[in-house]
Length: 213
Image (spheres, one colour):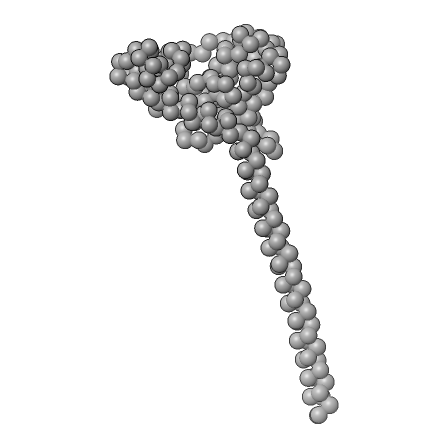
């Protein structure tokens, strides 16, 4: 009987020892998993910071454009002239006229699909996604380019486009065609993503697209 108790006690001690080993192993694995999680979070934050840092100029341009657009539109609706608005906002009259054209076009086609001007060169626009995010691809007989797209900034969409100085080099399209090509691309985005109810401003590094009620 005494031997049986001693054997049972030894077996119990062995079970406890094994359990402690299993616990310590699990604890180490948990610590390792936690470190992997923290590393992944740090890496994710770093990648996000790099992404937005790389597009800082485009985002700054977009928000400035949005503010000026809203102010210009407000003064247009109040009946102010392009000259007056350009002096108040320190922008070119051409910028104000573009906003005025949008206001008149939206009002004209309110409740129906606006008419788009065809573009020569058999253009093809694709909106897609890859591992780096959303993109817009433009391809025509004149040339081609690819631009990143950022959704979800209010009721807006940003399209990063080649800078005017690098336009011909990166696209193969004559510079004098830049605004017309980007207009076509922006209208395509409006039709595909905003049911045709939108406006846009062609900027230096970004085309700012806005949803219209």
